[in-house]
Image (cartoon, rainbow, N blue to C red):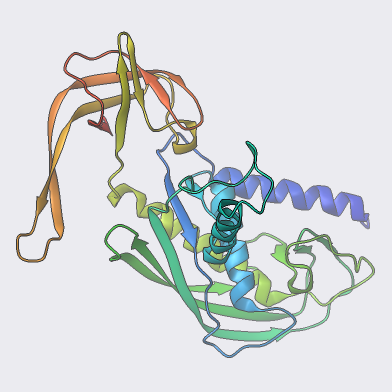
Amino acid sequence: MRKTGKTLLVGMLIGLVGWATAFGADGNLRYSITVTKFPNEAGWSGRWDVGDGFTTILTDALQQSGKFIVLGDSEMRQEAMAEQDLAATGRMAGGAKAPQMGRMTPAQLLVRGSITHVQDETGGGSGGLSFRGVSLGGSKGRAEVNITIYLVDSETGQVKASQKVIGQAGRRGLSVGYHGGALGGLGGNLAGFQNDNVGKACEDAVVQCVEFLEAQLASVPWKGSIMLVSGDKLVINRGTREGVTVGQKFQVGSTEDLVDPDTGEVLDSEMTTVGTTVVTETKEKIAYCTPLSGAAKGMSVVPVQ
């Protein structure tokens, strides 16, 4: 039986939801992250920019995973800062909604890399559907994309991990791929189109990249701070945005950085623990915890292992 376009769209969205759920949030504490543009060093050219496309797909996939606080790329953040600068000149209408300086979320982790090789042997298709940059349907031929990805600590500028990834069209078993000609918006072409196997290869590479980035989280120290201690209140500067949940336990204490006297580099930190507190209420960016004797504003909190 031939499926209608509506049926195809429903199936496609179910597939995307299932894929996102597979990477879904499971209560892990989150880190802020930003993706820089992946330059096209392979020299491949098609109907769309493979570097921009890969960056778009990866940013969206990280957002869907629920494991990260995803920030705009460097260009978006530059635009945001330009708006803040304009507002500061007094030429823009003021008020509570005017962009203000000093409120941008800093990125703890930076993702960058490059497209090092693209092989495209795409053939024509006989129909399909495109929705928000995603294409559905089978096509002849194959495609392969080679990616090198780096995870960088924004505080030190050091590369924490790197990985070479090879994405192949259709390898993940999902008949869903990014349609190059419709990246980022609703596309037509319901009667027929040339399926974009390079986009599907990028999708496969993105899935591998998200898995790689998630695997690095265990090695990234997670820390918050006490921002208020008053009577029966103890408030920390981490909330649901960072994955904090009611009932979660944190060790509280003062920390001292161990600094290399020759280079000034922070080599490690020592924490003197005063006790354990439990989260009783969460908001987006803060959490209320049980009172703790000896706790003071500015002390660090780390999750109980």
